[in-house]
Amino acid sequence: MTVSESQGRKFTVNEHVKNAWRRAGLIAVGQVPTNDELSEGREHLQYVINELESEGFPARNTGWIFVPMVEDTFKYTMPDGVQDLLNPAMYIDQDQKDPERSDSETQIKLITEQEYIRLSAKSAKGRPYLVYPDRGADQLIAYLWPIPDATGANVRFRVARNYFNVDDGDATLDLRRFWDGFILDALAARIAQRSSLLKVAMILQASAITKLKRCKGQARERPGTQAFVTHKGGHYA
Image (cartoon, rainbow, N blue to C red; front, side, top):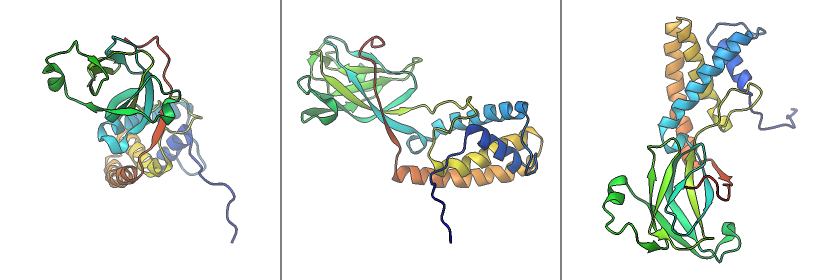
């Protein structure tokens, strides 16, 4: 038996679209979608990816970012693509030369809008241990309390970020490989429905729902994480 020497193959965006058109029964094996069909398929795929972000933590891509503190500044605008903050954040003292290998950290707890509103001394200063994530703006804003009293410290935020877009057909998806089966059926269901193949679409959608449950279970066991580097100033309020 000969075993392949390669491993970990990931389909490109256009390969996902091509396979979905075939899965829906709209092109035969050996045929390829037209450029218009590839473009339309990528639009449907973007909807599938966007809807994943409503599935909660197991379907979201998580990671962490370091945000440098500025004295007397309590509002920090998160970078583009950050969807939410996750517990816990950590305050890292300014005397730590390498924030990634700190030996002096204080936990910062996420609180709700109502809890933040009820803070009676919003002008208090010190080492922050509470944070309210304001999700109402175009970019998420973190409100720290007490107000940081030192410049040079860092906060390490755990974040859930948006998936990258799928407009580049030669790129791979911003998902781990075990999502491929779900993506195939969910995308094929959309394409079949668009072509009025309603029975086929229902079958594919049912299969996609089953695979989604399995994928979320796998993601729960091994959540994907990634580190992000923030700019040293500029976009912080």
